[in-house]
Image (tube, rainbow, N blue to C red; front, side, top):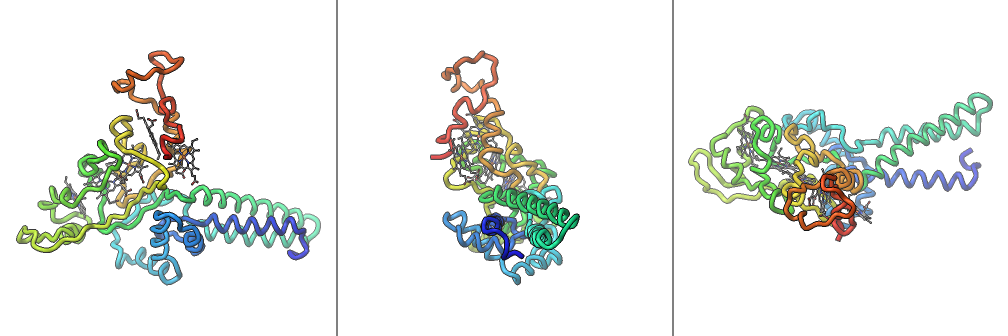
Length: 334
Ligand code: HEC
Ligand code: HEC
Ligand code: HEC
Ligand code: HEC
Ligand code: HEC
């Protein structure tokens, strides 16, 4: 029957399949990678950023590798049990739609077949089935296509288990104690291990991980906690970067933290509740950057704005970021 349908429908079907196929790409969730991602990632690995994705993907793609990740998750053998993504942050991002997609596709094909074969009421039921399945496939395609190149929900395993919940939450350490560059430079930066040692020269054990994780700090620094000497060669920690804007976007922390008085949490979410760091917001041009720029007022007490002349505006009017050029393409793209 499928062979008998009109050529337009056939082209439509093939297009739909192709679209849906590409839409599965770029699901960067470390443990939610689908086989199809690999194909797409390899095909579109143009930028350096994409190449890192591919490396990450290659590490976990393939049946064996996927099994291994599952096993690590369940028995916590090589990945410790305490290294968790908190429940609250588990479902961020597009998630894994592979199974849902396959089921919808099967329903679609069966119903499509039934439309041609059946008569009367059953035929109409099948028509409804086709439409529903098509709707659902379109929804998945939209979700996946929207997430292309973005990484909401990305939460890579880090070389040392570092819990923001324990440090920024329970022990209330200020974000800028560790990310001290955020106020003054483009990058917030990740602290060097010397900063950890301000406390961990004393704190040698944690309640959750015992001495296992803190020992890694010592190991990387070549520090011997019994003799209190740095007597071995150290090696740098390779933290995995969680937030990655494309190279064609300019983003500056000091512009927001110092000049704009924007809180870290407005962009990074409730970091102080995270045991493993997760990219909380979808770093999208429209729904994230521009939306805030259209809604948020600038700090008018900033002396710099005394020299600004705002057209048709009263003294007390709120001046949103877009009025000072925050929606000009060249502010963010150069
Ligand atoms: C004791 C030091 C320390 C404190 C305090 C701290 N952080 Fe961090 N932060 C780190 C380290 C180390 C990393 C890298 C490891 C990781 O990603 O988990 C990191 C990573 C991050 C990242 C991810 C960076 C990336 O790779 O994209 C964000 C965002 C972040 N911190 C925000 C915050 C915020 C917001 C606060 C305050 C609520 C805070 N941090 C407090 C040490 C700290
Ligand atoms: C206006 C939104 C916004 C605010 C406010 C903000 N960040 Fe970020 N942050 C980002 C974006 C976007 C990135 C990704 C930058 C990139 O990939 O170039 C990022 C990246 C980071 C990183 C990774 C390293 C780096 O500098 O690229 C850390 C760490 C971080 N932020 C911590 C913080 C802390 C701590 C604060 C508060 C003091 C903060 N951020 C405030 C949006 C924000
Ligand atoms: C301002 C002090 C301070 C700084 C700086 C600091 N820590 Fe901690 N850290 C603590 C305290 C206090 C604990 C103990 C928490 C507890 O009671 O388990 C701790 C616990 C830990 C633990 C064990 C958690 C557990 O419960 O098993 C690890 C791992 C750790 N820190 C890593 C780091 C790393 C990596 C850095 C540097 C990026 C760092 N810390 C910086 C104060 C600090
Ligand atoms: C939570 C709100 C918020 C978000 C989200 C946000 N910004 Fe901003 N942004 C601001 C504020 C407030 C200012 C104004 C600072 C000032 O007074 O100059 C600003 C200013 C800017 C400027 C300077 C504009 C100019 O003409 O002076 C750039 C560039 C910029 N942001 C880029 C970005 C990018 C890129 C993103 C997304 C990755 C982003 N911002 C997300 C609040 C935000
Ligand atoms: C406030 C910052 C900001 C401004 C202003 C801005 N962009 Fe963007 N743009 C971004 C960010 C962040 C991304 C990457 C995130 C994403 O996928 O949306 C992006 C992505 C893009 C992309 C790539 C989309 C893709 O899917 O890869 C294009 C094209 C683009 N912008 C064009 C423009 C044009 C044209 C303008 C002016 C009308 C503009 N941008 C203004 C922040 C901005």
